[in-house]
Amino acid sequence: MKVEVVDGDREFSSMLLLNTMKKDPTNSTEEALGVVYQLIRSGEPPNLETAQKFISKGDKVKFTIRFKGRELQHSHLGNKLMNKIKEDMKVIGKVELDPKFDGKQMIMVIQPL
Image (cartoon, rainbow, N blue to C red; front, side):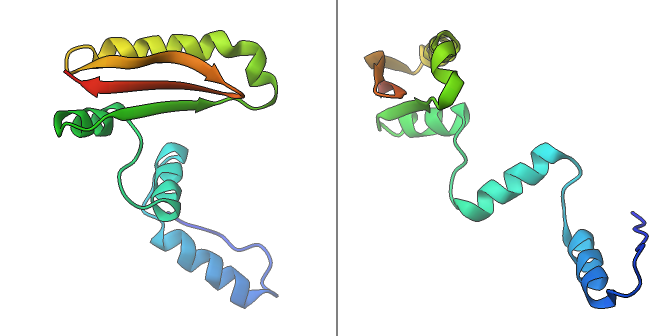
């Protein structure tokens, strides 16, 4: 990747920018967000594979969707997502607590079979 520096007066800041860009291992916005997420919250990223791993160990998994602002008006999309998760997890777990609203968040708990 070639980066051209427009303002030569700020040599130190442009060198810092160039060095940072050289170290960046990502090629897309999604990859960059994943790297930032890993830096902020180390450990397992939240996805279905991680949840399935916890359930296969015998642990319960709690799914939470937080709604902010206008998202509350479209809570049916949260219901759709919870139902999709429920279908994906049906093979290895059963729903202990059906999706329900608790203030501005929707919660569902799945336990191992």
